[in-house]
Image (cartoon, rainbow, N blue to C red; front, top):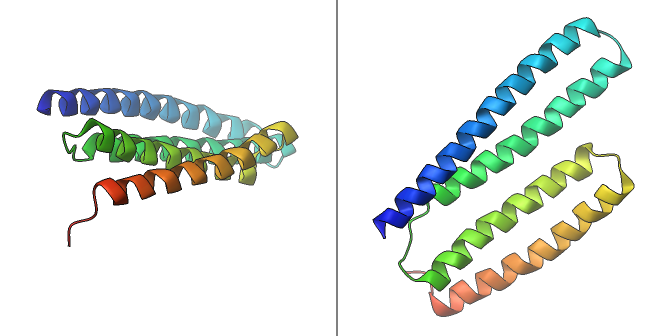
Length: 137
């Protein structure tokens, strides 16, 4: 059991590290672009792109951090439900960022569908976890 948790933590840490390095490099290149294009529409678009990128990266890092520190119960069904709930919530959060920052109508429609579908899935997972593993009082 501890071996599985250690592997999850290791993978989540590696992913977070990779995203952090990519985000840092992206942010640095964005800063240089902003200096070169100060006051232009391109700078405004770049800043919005950086904000969107930062929101997406934060959502992913939060999800990985939460999932890697989540205490496992030893019950594969319950552990799966807990992990998938966090995964689906991150999908909803990313879809909300897409609706806020994105422009493509097809991606906007997909984001709306993801929010709807993942919300329903979370409700099913919550119902199952409550039914089969009621919270301790």
